[in-house]
Image 1 (cartoon, rainbow, N blue to C red):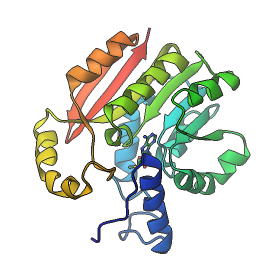
Image 2: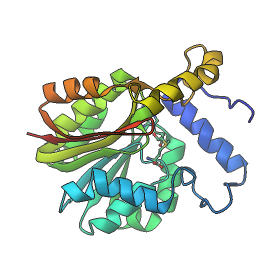
Image 3: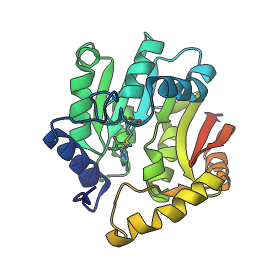
Image 4: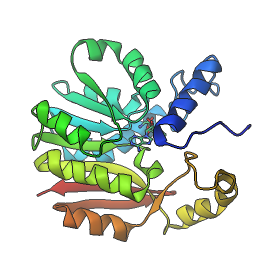
Length: 242
Ligand SMILES: C[S@@+](CC[C@H](N)C(=O)[O-])C[C@H]1O[C@@H](n2cnc3c(N)ncnc32)[C@H](O)[C@@H]1O
């Protein structure tokens, strides 16, 4: 595959991904759906992930914040699972958000999906959620296959945001990249060849953490960790706000 013209920021890099997808006439591998991101996993695997990270731990939900929803495959499953819920879907990529609004047009129209473009001000999203009346009132902050791509500073920013917006008993559910598992280590080694030419620029590669880093961060932010499970290169994490 030709090297994509990735930019230097998360936003420009993921916008470039969507523009390439649009230019390709929405070509996807056969049988893998028509929306960008649906080629990763299957409907059954998305449902299993959602069950483990969210549904089994949250009998009811009315306010959900999803970071990096992409085209919204998990967003849709959550809206179906919690018929009374609203999802605040925030992303750095304006192009990805446009696709999400296209895919979930009915839910956006019904006011069940609110989209938010994450900008360069680290506190902007917390303020927006406060203005919306959600500060300390959110049931779940979740992120699927997105925080494995952000550096530790950004990850810390989202964990801190979760600690600010979740209600006591609310959950943070996410997947990060685990450098310490066998599969994580193997991918880390394999990807050296891929990341090297970018010289440190964004390239949609994984950004690695470890169970210790997650436990340390979450404990200090007022969470009790309920799940830390390695699968492949991912670490599945659920933490409950005290
Ligand atoms: C691999 S896609 C996953 C999308 C979706 N969650 C899914 O599973 O299909 C990564 C998503 O994370 C978003 N993203 C990348 N960097 C981000 C950042 N720093 N903050 C928030 N979202 C980010 C991308 O724009 C994209 O929507």
